[in-house]
Amino acid sequence: MQSAFVQGFGVGGGLIVAIGAQNAFVLTQGVRRNYQYLVAAICSLCDILFIGLGVTGVGAAVAIHPEVARWMGWGGSLFLCWYGLRALRSALAGGHLETANEVSLSRGRVVGATLAVTLLNPHMYLDTVLFLGSISTQFAGQGRYFFGMGAMSASLVWFFALSSGGQCLAPLFRKNITWRMLDLFVWLTMWGIAAVMIRRLLLL
Image (cartoon, rainbow, N blue to C red; front, top):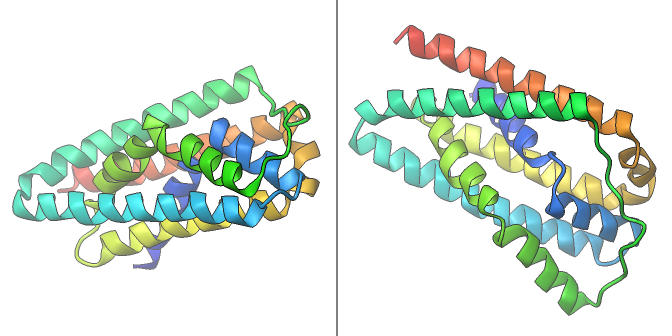
């Protein structure tokens, strides 16, 4: 169970930390101390909701059709390999996050903007419902729920750390080397977990 939780935390964290509009918005509000905890709560709750749907919904479908689990496991493994490769390419290319030109918003606009950058991003549904749900089927019994809990925990830790530490983290995230190191960490995490999954599938 502990292994499932740790792997869930690693995969979930790897999916969440990539540079994108949502993280840029969360970091910006954290830097400006502009309803930053409300923003973190909304992002985390959306992730928790859809991760839960993925783990329970996909898991239930696999319980009805057990033969699907193997194919979904290979699909999840290939996705992790692809995502890790993308992180490696991003690390080699470099990047940075710019927040200086953003303006403060009212609470209502903050809520609307947070929901927009979260729910209007199709990758959010792919990552939480489809891919995390698919990968969770590789854990027997209660293991998939511990995997989901690990992914949910990663979301909570990331968004609240990004929001509360915005003032300290902003200078780091504007540096190319920070994102290179982060992308390298994501690459190693994704490929490491993919290797474990592939080994498990080959032994079935």
